[in-house]
Length: 130
Image 1 (cartoon, rainbow, N blue to C red):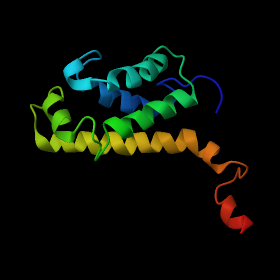
Image 2 (image 1 turned 30 degrees about the horizontal axis):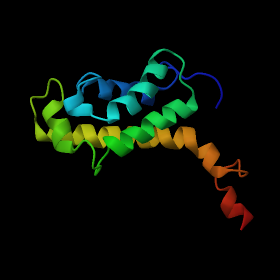
Image 3 (image 1 turned 120 degrees about the vertical axis):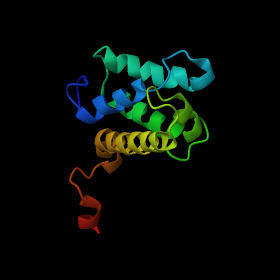
């Protein structure tokens, strides 16, 4: 995919940004730590209308790595405690993690899959070659 990708172009990307907005703001070191810079850089590009497929892909991978289910960086418990407006309800934190993980995985597949296929430009091409 070429060109910039905005929130208006991709509803899943817009949803992921909405989920991120439920967390503490950028620069909240006690929550984000080292992750702030990694996610923030890509997010700022996207919000400024300057993000490309690789930026969306990196953002989604960072969400999977640092906020997704089973990660070792920002735990589900930390997310639950810091979600805005839900008063640390465990089910809300669990739902946030599941939703962010699923949405990020959708974006990774959407923006990475063409590169993963390599020379096979049709779905299932590996099976047809065999």
